[in-house]
Length: 140
Length: 149
Image 1: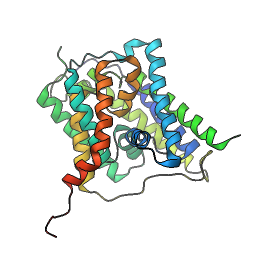
Image 2: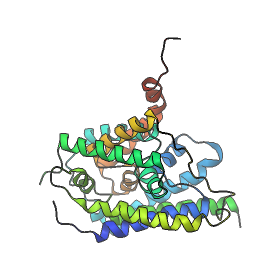
Image 3: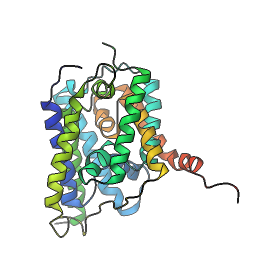
Image 4: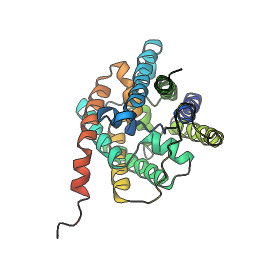
């Protein structure tokens, strides 16, 4: 096991939960990012604008964070770009067939004890762990 | 005030705060995510606290939010109600997990990382969007009803 630094992850997790609660309190929507992104690339009338605004916030927030604190985006994964490309394809297909990702199933769904989200989260954690076991983790 | 404008501004600010949470939590570092999934190798359990912090915060706030008759800028709360398990849920989630372990990105951190111009994040987001476009066809191929008819 590696040395742990729990404060960043814990505070970040609380901020993620707060952002999701904010979207529910103000707009009554679940912050499932794969579903929101799909609604942007395949627009669906009245649901397009808020989704585009949310994605704009995510990307814009990333730009601001990078300018303030580029070390937040350090990538020591060592994954070649073609692997990232295959990964993106699997994530795009998988999250749409499986109706959600880490945010919608992992945070919002599990918080509500939604059975579909619990099963989905256990499934993607399991295949993620198996995949890293097979292809290897981060070289030290 | 204009309701539609409030609705979009609220979404934008939620996305912004979400991005900050992702950055602070280290979810925007693919090496951390892969380390978290590396259970049988050099395991880094710290991302448990991202999920723990997010789930507990949302679970508590959700209870309070649901006491309101409606959201502030919309007529009603839209919360998924399906409880049935089906093949697409499992197969789709399994494929997502494989991609997550391969790349170290899930959709939110990948979008947030676009700002860092990490080439892997750029490639990942492009192919993720392609994957979303073709997902209906993949689903139809995988879950086609028996062709006996």
